[in-house]
Image (cartoon, rainbow, N blue to C red; front, side):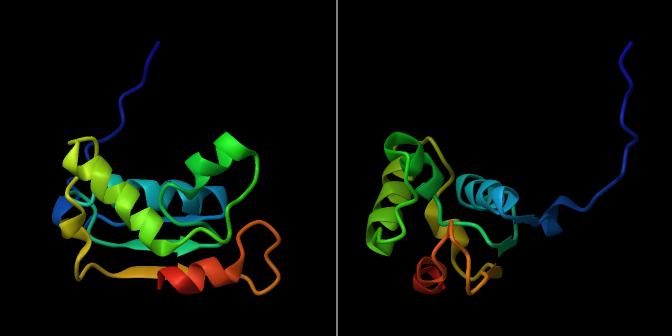
Length: 114
């Protein structure tokens, strides 16, 4: 038996995404990949776009990765039509926060992305 969710009549023009820790990584991926749908994001104790995917390849969190590398990766995916145009991110509110003693995501990486 399946249940249907109620119709919420949400205003999709005000849709944002937020997450903490692993949820923040997911929120980041959603904000960048679907920047045509999300109007902003709250990223708390999470990493930058594509960082999680690259950590799966190496087994380590690349805290020293350059912002330009991440930007180039997102732009390449957008050009290939795999994610929304990164130009959609311009002027959208994105709140980034990290913990000073975070052992997984170096706060310096978060600061670089601000």
